[in-house]
Amino acid sequence: MTNPTPTFHIRDLSIYGDTVLSPMATYSDVPFRAICRHFGAALHYTEFVPTEALIGDPNPLWRRLDVHPAGEHPMVFQIFGGDARQILFAAQRIEAWGADIIDINMGCSVPKVSEKGAGVGMMCQPKLVAETFHLLTSHLRVPVTGKLRLGWDETSQNYLEIAQIMVDNGAALVALHGRTRSQKYRDQADWEAIAKLKQSVPVPVLGNGDVHTVADIDRLKAYTDCDGVMIGRAALGNPWLLARIDREQLTFAEITAVLRHHLHEAIAYYGPTDGLQNINRHLKKYLSGLALKPFLPAFQAVQSVSGFEDLLGEMETAVPPHLTIADLRQIPHLPSPTHLQAKV
Ligand SMILES: Cc1cc2nc3c(=O)[nH]c(=O)nc-3n(C[C@H](O)[C@H](O)[C@H](O)COP(=O)(O)O)c2cc1C
Figure 1 (cartoon, protein in one colour):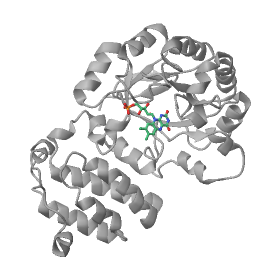
Figure 2 (figure 1 turned 30 degrees about the vertical axis):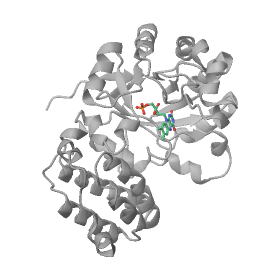
Figure 3 (figure 1 turned 120 degrees about the horizontal axis):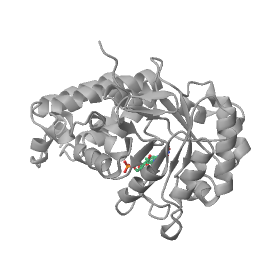
Figure 4 (figure 1 turned 180 degrees about the vertical axis):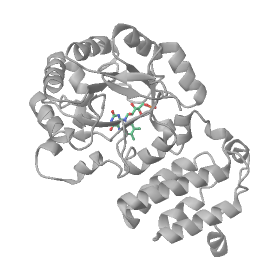
């Protein structure tokens, strides 16, 4: 067997593949990452964790940095903060917890983060970026990376300047979401900016924003020459995208098989009660675009794993398993759960 050729390197780490799961608070947890790894995600990011939560006693946010018992590599732990020494303390503390890479979030636009100078607020403080990356890269063994937006607003798009400062201070990769803080998630992501970044830094670049289909992955790569494509919202309920498979061509049976796998990962990690709550959040995404809304309240009302599986079985009996998502979209009224029909 020949060794596969790495797609790119993050310092001395070989990365195989070019589709990357975005960090997504409340979604990119241990169970979902297991599913995305199954579909070939080349890198996994944790949900972001505030550095204040990492300097004191154990607390629930630490769980965001859990790693699957079967191992997850390469694993990126993402943190955010507005104080370089505190970021260093937190990073040193978590380096031993299983991180292959530590990433600094410089893209979060939520006011309670950005207006305190963390997340995208860091992009307004070039000296803080320099100090943070200098401290981290001179004290940590693992590579240090950062995820940026274009800048604070349309008139202050300083991603090239910030990326240069990161690289000058040892950053091993830059990920860019092609929107400003003020755009939040509006408008088209600016792929031109991703292309400019790729031309201006010697480290790998991940392009992010507005990737919905396999064609988008290929277009973003061709347009920007980025090393990897980071996929967020479009991977929710649709981890096949990481394997370059479009959801429209999947059969209903393929969707429910993965949903079942995800359910088992969620129960194994969270236990039955929280696991059911967790899978219900993803269920909506797996079924999105299909006329299966009547099933959602029934799934939410279910109290046991076996009840959830029964309902899943009922849905599988009711919907022709060989039909593709594209076929099913054409059907305006798919069946409701039988016990709901009985009540009507
Ligand atoms: C629910 C949600 C949670 C997110 N949480 C994080 C996070 O913890 N860290 C981060 O860097 N970006 C976070 N993001 C931003 C995404 O990583 C990504 O940059 C953004 O969604 C654009 O990519 P997309 O168009 O592929 O979704 C989050 C986005 C969403 C929708």
